[in-house]
Amino acid sequence: MLDYLGEHVTQELSEKIEALRAAIVNLRNITVEIAKERYERMPKGKRAIGADELIKVVLEHYYRRFGELPFPIC
Image (tube, rainbow, N blue to C red):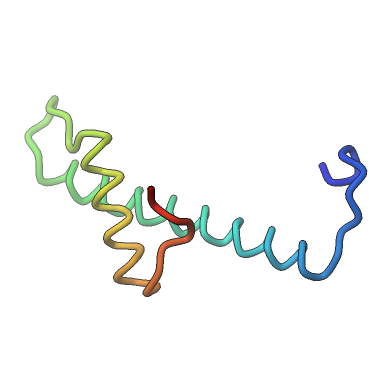
């Protein structure tokens, strides 16, 4: 992607990309954990958790686990 954009990969840019990738993986893992946990507790055929609440809960879990959020919240 960076070659396509004509960007040179510096050590700083590489570290930022890796940090972003790690944050995305962590957010995905937390989302799956929460969704699975809630789904298993809810009766079959009912939505386990709404999208807005899921986002809120995922960010709360991320903050508790890592002590900061991966991006600023507006």
